[in-house]
Length: 354
Image (cartoon, rainbow, N blue to C red; front, top):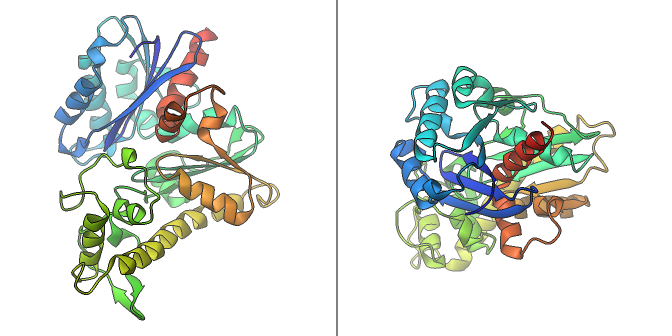
């Protein structure tokens, strides 16, 4: 990795890092699994996988996070402190580290620890501010592996009501559903099969990665976590896990066609929850949001694109707001790790304006 600016998005399940050259052009984006709920050693391993000790000496690093919410920490403030301490210990001593605190505020690690409430779970705000600087009107849908952000943008301003996780959950700007890690049992309680409404087990037998895999919607590069049973990720393995949610055995009383039918229903229910959150934000828009386009990002950007199509709205993939000459794989990675790209871009802009 070469460059003078890096953007970090340290989540509870993944570590995402974007790099920019001196002119602010995106060079690379990488994501690695980082199950932080298992301890800070996971962050150290993820940093090692990204070879952070070899990152350019003298580089400037922009950091945002959501991993402080993991239950390995007693509270969010402890999480912010632990994550920043771990990261500082892994990076070259000659780098500059700045922590995103929202509203164009960049803090040193020491200052960030004393302002944990502003630092915690602010990655959505960094992304929204970058998007609002490039799209004057729209709704940002960042649909990730675990959560979805639904953010209204009007007149080039981020029109959020919530700021932290609690207030954002309360006002529908944060929806705890994603296309990879969300447990199927969290999406609905029953599904149609063989002319019956079949109840689902309240067990962690299958995830939405299995659902979207069965429907051919999931980019396998975006599924970096182990399957619910720790086994394979082919179609048959996904169908077997989903059948178990119905108390059935795949190949005995549940066929591949059956499981795809169940998957279609689950996918619709999940999309409906996101669509309801979208409707709530659109109801706040000046004209009822009738003309607002959707801006899609994350592993589940395909859901945002589908909602735009069904509602007759314009659709802008996040990567279309960046450099026009990016290669296909880099563009896809930028969309997957949009908040990491955003904090890098925002800090580069602030650095140039000093």
